[in-house]
Length: 283
Image (cartoon, helix red, strand yellow):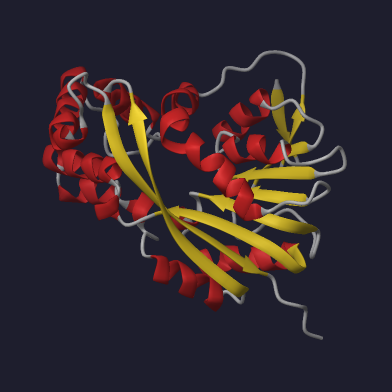
């Protein structure tokens, strides 16, 4: 078991019930929707074996797990997230002395100035209420010449999965609820990502658009897993079982062009992969 002590998750004795929605997220969404981006993201981070890394918005620990595979015994990864349930789940899954877990707002990171050489942020930056403040904190904790690696989903029109979710929720629950599902693609324009990193003071900024085809064996299972993994407070809270079923069926109809004769889902997944370098400190 793990408990929160002064912002850091530490080992404790006893048992703890982990949030079931996080387990569903990691079991039903991560393997087919996120896992294939893990190694490309670590390539973008480009860690040295002894790197000191912060993984910002670490979620259930996907990128931390991949990063640890590139480090030697002296390397470290600090997983940071605002969601204590995600952190507890990640900490329970990763038993490695090189990993630590920190509950923190992205704009107030619990690290000293110039204390790390890499910061990764996979599918998190678009959710931050003050992106420039978060990036200023990243610059503060990075040593001069340190590397920032960011991935954000591409444009909504290039990602059929979140587009179908948004349209289905919008039809069932109204336009505002549907629009709330599009935040995942709020930094879908690569030009906007480039401009954001440059405005935050990063140098040698590069943004690449990448696309992969991702598959799930059963479109209905994929849709049901997506709905079950949505966080508490989302638009679908309080739906009846019948309404859940209606929402799943509506997503399936909207994705009809991406379903083969065996009911397998095949959709394009596009991401912006961006990197930048922290500049030298000015006196």
